[in-house]
Length: 431
Ligand code: 4AD
Ligand code: MG
Image (tube, rainbow, N blue to C red):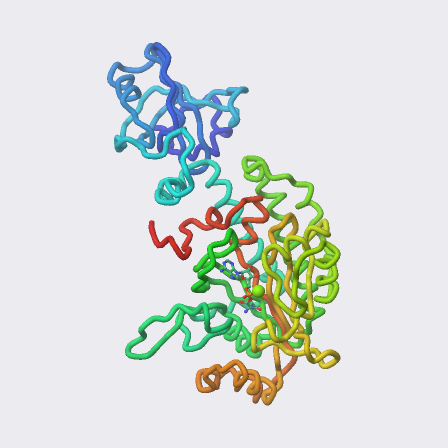
């Protein structure tokens, strides 16, 4: 028996016998020929079954194969200039592993709901492969960025006793007769990590009971969150721009084929290099006014506002100094302008909006306790968090990058639902 190899490696086996295994992506028949498009997850290859060169039994099996049936083939790798892969397989033997039932996803156009209901199968399509591989590269290069800079991975728990990002989007669970909540952000634990290790990041799933049905909201999404001791807002913004640039440049370099499948225009992406424009909240409001957007000064920006602001720039823009009243309790206020938080959001271009939220944190015990009370948060649940301000408190800052929104932007998608293998939204818990 020849070696079993992956389709992506066939170039190393030209004119040699190999064994391949996978699923039938597509089939064409004409007279004495069966053209089987075999997919093994790494690539697809056309397998040519010629009646004259195989047993009757093998030809019959090739004829029987239905879409997504699993099978093994033995054959010779030959050059084929016309195929995207550059090679095809001249089959000598074929074994069916499982003959598939009639496959629900066909070549005709399907509606999004139908495809989402069949997400477990839809993941087999080439477009979904491209998106998930870009996602993988985004996560790989995001970790690489912090690893290269000596950050320590300090992960945060999923079950938490308290809110981090407001009490309106908490998922509550029963935790042995106590209430627990699914984490909205690892940040507060990241701060403890930063006081222990200096520079840390955490990376994991986060949860928000978002009642909004928008193209940017999931109820379960992944966030990577660095936290840095002895760091102020300026340094925080600088790390954020270098980080996002690192990710985008890596995807362009390592996932070019996937971006081509997604028909992604690279003009905008190639621009994503520091420095990014950085504007004060006031300047952002000016932009909205100039564009005749109905906006109340002092409010947070909505999706449309972010689109208008980000459209003014050829790369992501960072907006800083948001009004403290629209931001989280833990953000430090600017002593120079106490109504503003030392906060920043990074807005992606082309209408994608916020991909990063971050800030310098309140490091003073008394001020933080006051904020906790103002926000009606349970003091007891935050006792450990307040401790960090009792034992060697230092200026510190960090941010969180939402993986799905970043995938959506880099891939040029119209909705976050395709950016994660199994999306969770207000109306979707299945599959
Ligand atoms: O701006 P957010 O709420 O910031 C925090 O959670 C901070 N604690 C992060 C930190 O400083 N360590 O969320 C950060 C990012 C957003 O910019 C967005 O990319 C993503 O998380 N995000 C969502 N992505 C998908 N669906 C949702 N419902 C999201 N909510 C936030
Ligand atoms: Mg935010």
